[in-house]
Image (cartoon, rainbow, N blue to C red; front, top):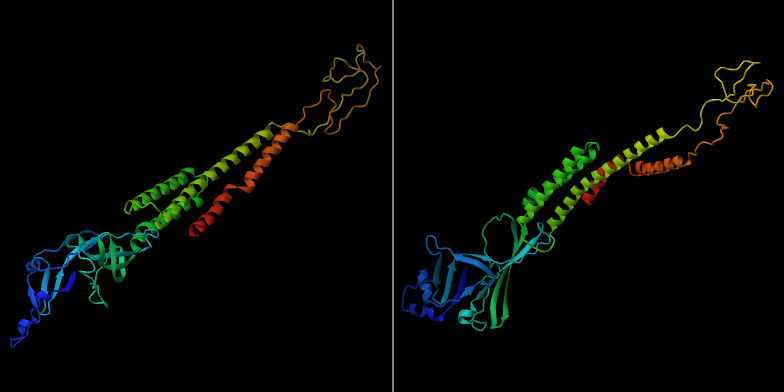
Length: 374
């Protein structure tokens, strides 16, 4: 911190008129002498903490010029408050300010007593080569203004530093691992849908890894109540990983449902009787008094003791056509079974043709990358 002010009481140019060789340009004295002189009580309003460098001695000096100008230089480190806006984190730029003002509490120096201004208007802030781990200094801006407080008007200098965050660290530690985890979760779409242990283990592992990565990333960032850019990226990545697990759950349920319907179809076909028997029914025939031994009805037209005896007349055999039945009791109607068969078949066609499991895996291989890239 370098400060210059004019104190006419310290001018000594009129004492040099009688000296023949006037080669004294300035007087450099010890810093201890500064305590005996008047000086502006400069402080930093937005300071959080600061300290002077005193190794191996106090890093400051005092110089007095013949016209009464006083020049001081002090080496100190100041940690100032910077209100950052992290909506675009980590692709954000921050503007931090360092303010300089007179400590009006002690002496009450208002704009009528002290006016601060930058001595060199072209390059008021000098900087050396330095490297910050997360930021790059883009530009510096200075301004001088008067602030109105409850105790009066005061002069204040403001130096604004424009920083741009270096995103390289977050690309290596956050973005690339998240992208790889999401891609690994898509590998389950190429696995056999019957390989349940492999697909479940892969999906659960990627979800746990994504959760750990999100927690460790948020632990190293400021606790803010609004959503940051990196939060949106990690949230979308987590949703994609979790969606791959839901996709396998849908495929597993539909596959199980189709197998159940197919099993019911087989059982239904096994229980239904044949509706068109391939056989002919004939009435027995006989010659004269010979009766077929396999045919012994209780009431017969060939039995003389039966009331149905027709005098031995032989009638031609009765041949039933295919599908005809002259039973006194009609067979049970198969309509309910056929109706159940048609209903289950319709459900089977909807599940198997419209949302076939292998089609879900096939479409997921293209839909998931497109949604993630958009």
